[in-house]
Picture 1 (cartoon, rainbow, N blue to C red):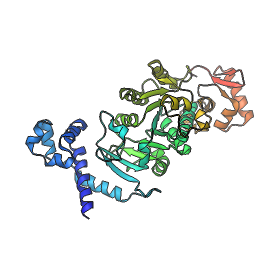
Picture 2 (cartoon, rainbow, N blue to C red):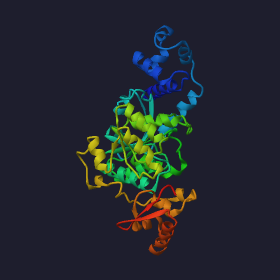
Picture 3 (cartoon, rainbow, N blue to C red):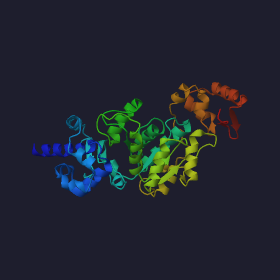
Picture 4 (tube, rainbow, N blue to C red):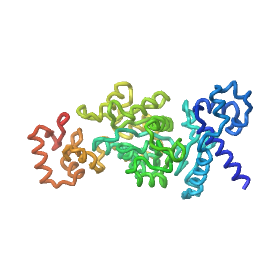
Length: 390
């Protein structure tokens, strides 16, 4: 009982520090460095705080933040309901900066979160990792590439980190889970008691069992717009490098890439068609010095991860990434289903048939129509390519 009371007191002090208004992460870390623990911060006399924080911050520290008791009870209940992993460890954990399990890569960042809420395999935090990020509305090739690169990296024993968003993020998590060895970490912009986007409910459940869900936000936190850049910095900090699969010139993926570069991490990008708006962000990064990669092997070599468990799957290239993915989003937008499945890179009729489910006769007839309309070009080798921005 005494140990439980100590754990409760410690958790309460950390949550109080996180929730105290006007005391930012920088000031909180300054206080912790000087005084040693949250309990010591709140027990310190005014004179000890004068040299550390402003008067406004000292005043805020003297008052318990609104809703603190409710947050403590909610967190304790969330932990108590934790399922048990095969390793015997409880799946749900709250890690503070002082916890030995707190990821070392994140400690190296300029602004590591004071607390991390985790559900799943904490062992993934100690493995070499690569961030895989990109558009929420990727082309078919982009979705395939995200899945295939992530699967190959995971098969090579590398953990794939992403943000659980629609599009590239979701495909990367799925590929890494299917790869098995390295698995995947999803850093989210909400409390871990909710899933955003809702379309990823099943994926989040799978991540909690086979991968890891991670958040710096307290339980009950809604998906506020300001949370996602914060989420992106954690994605970048946890990894040795960030691979951008597809991105527009103005996108959250490029924010993650910029943050990675500022932290001294590598930035890598997959090139695409010059006709594709999805490729412009990647091309901009390459012009700025990002590493152009065509295969998962390129990623492993650039990040010096090519040793241990690398198998033939790591040689998958963007041209070979042919996993069939759902094209419903593109079709729902009113785009021709064949053009949506085609994307912007050269593709064979067989690959289009696999992506769309169309039979050879119907597909051939539609391709001819699109060719006569000037929207598709027939290339050598029985390949087809979308023309311009049609």
